Length: 101
Image 1 (cartoon, helix red, strand yellow):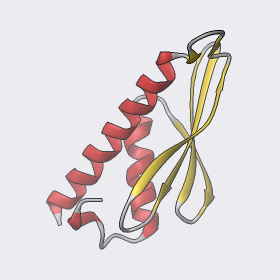
Image 2 (cartoon, rainbow, N blue to C red; image 1 turned 120 degrees about the vertical axis):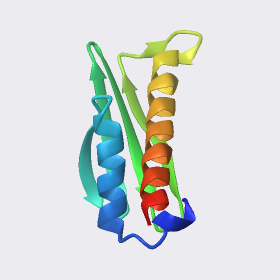
Image 3 (tube, rainbow, N blue to C red; image 1 turned 30 degrees about the horizontal axis):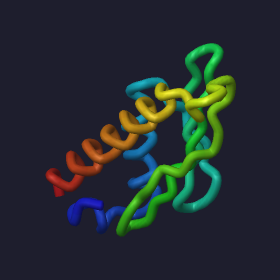
């Protein structure tokens, strides 16, 4: 978490996460303070991940990858690409907020 973003209240960090992901079509559901469920659908695939966050850090945790299982490769590479993009977008948004503070 960038130092400038560490002073933000949790609801502001959550808003930054949601705004970052919405750019690429991720939808979010508030699960608890410090936790949102991110869902990305690109028919017929559905990727779900939880974003867990505090004032000090955040992480993205695998939930499911529907219709994306491959017999010998595990989860489809697209899942990892989509979640990687989400990770970079969240980092960029938090950096942007930190730079303004």
